[in-house]
Length: 267
Image 1 (cartoon, rainbow, N blue to C red):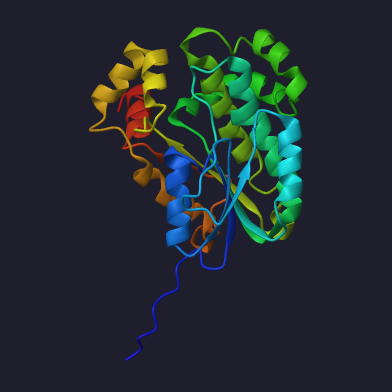
Image 2: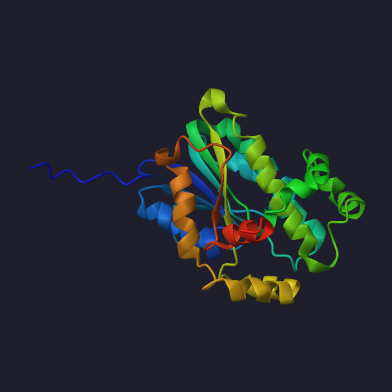
């Protein structure tokens, strides 16, 4: 009888997790550790939970991101871009952290990645309407930190209703699609996960911002998601088992995206 135990899917992999101190980022770090990975955690808030090495950084500041990229080691096998701000934060900060800073850090870390590394972006159900924002998304492709304030005003992605958050996730899904083969010569792939409402410390921020709209969504769902629902999907996309997924956005939302698409198409 063969008594050899199967190897954990992330054994020997070194993975950067941003937003590792709470919510989905914290749970993702825990799952990666449980699956044999070595976690390089990044957050503004110091934590020792489920990380092998911790790096403090403010992802709204290009100087912090540049310093972080220099401090992180070579030999990275995965990057989980999970850090993000809720729609109650100022629009400029939301775009800097959720989109501009995320893209800047990713581009800086690609040269430090091993062959066949995986990049996973935490998008959102809020980004489902990205095809309607293509002009603004294209304009934001190479948006710099010092250009964000003008961009918010020009493309009206500030103000009430959490538009800055929605746009940041729309642009992130589109960026994931666009980069499906960007680093194919090294086997590096990019995918994203789009949760619906998740019971984390910022769920109240979404309900406060979206009001009746959020209440309607929650009434359709059987329950809000939990970090434990999302983290295993992120871990799967970081593993070799998802090697044929490139530029894919996985809806992990209890069926909410399917509900919206069915309603839109009269099904």
